Length: 163
Ligand code: DLZ
Image (tube, rainbow, N blue to C red):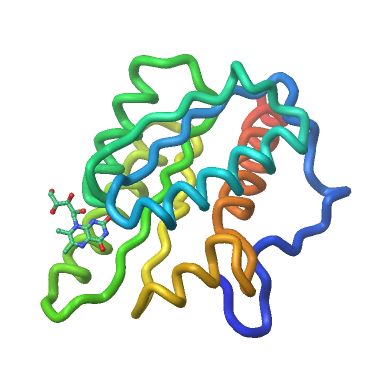
């Protein structure tokens, strides 16, 4: 996660395998859409930069971050993909809804990783305010979408190396 000391988009490019033969699903939440579309652009552009073909990247929407788990599962069950990236943004409000959504999606995505033996990558921002989210969606702390894309490529590489 980005801090003032770590930019999400800083990574060692040499250590990332070429993604030309990999297929990705990306599911994004419609809540805080300015942020989630920026995360998507970061993820998409990073996958392309590392060799992924545009036709091998499927984009789907769900209403909110809580629905990312089922959205990701439906992609995994119905589309031929090597990894699924989920992108959302939950901003702290006045009630505990934030905690329930964050807990639900974190546990949900963890469960999917284990159940399907497929990389499901967690690209969800959980911030105190809109500015913190903007800072991590193409702002001064980079873009968590970039990080999610790199993580997806690395996890697919790991899986392929063990076949
Ligand atoms: C209800 C809700 C609230 C309060 N906040 C957010 C948020 O900050 N980010 C987000 O992606 N979704 C939010 N939602 C919607 C929930 O994720 C979910 O769509 C609804 O609770 C319906 O299941």
